[in-house]
Length: 105
Length: 105
DNA sequence: CAGAGTTATATCATAAAGTGATATATTTAA
DNA sequence: TTAAATATATCACTTTATGATATAACTCTG
Image (cartoon, rainbow over all chains, first blue to last red; front, side):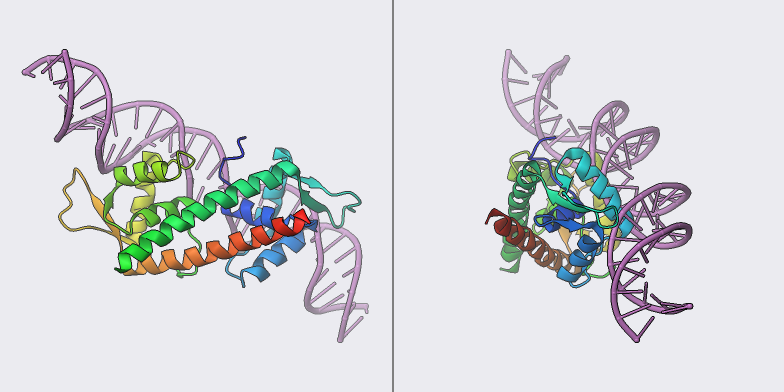
């Protein structure tokens, strides 16, 4: 998969939480807390996406994880993918804002 | 649907293009051009999403549209939804960037 | 003016993504 | 000791996205 490939919003949010080692439940809580409850990721979405990210090798199981608290972290590849996606998303937002601003005039 | 509800990326991109009156084909070309081909919206996605946005009354069929070139534009409601989504997306990006920056140290 | 290329809308069938509900087990705190 | 919170996991279903294809009207060029 190319690094220019766009992430889904859920993938983006989960990956954004994994710049530090965190386990699934912590990610769910964090995203919800950070967005003041606007974005919620349920367990079904969480563990489905975790699986996918592991398969892509964008995250990995952090050392010393017990089965009770499986901790994940971005790989280098994962960081690059996330960075590329941040850039793309910034562009998207910028275009939307320019359009909205022009429409105001 | 609440205005705080998150838009999918495709919906966001299409709505961002409709701050000015544009027809489907023009939106497809515009998004592709603006993102240098990174994001492409094919006709299937385009017209599926157009239908959904019309139903939500976030866009409307602009006056004087011939069937050959159906032109759409954001409604006031649509603008608000887009604006709210821009805000949310900015937050998402900011969180990702903060995380990435901290991980660098 | 024939026909090739582009513009433009539309849908079908399928694939991909997301999620509510539910299950299970452990840990913590009252 | 038991209720609540923590934590992982999966099933079945819905929603969303899209490749392929169809159709037709314009536009340009030889």
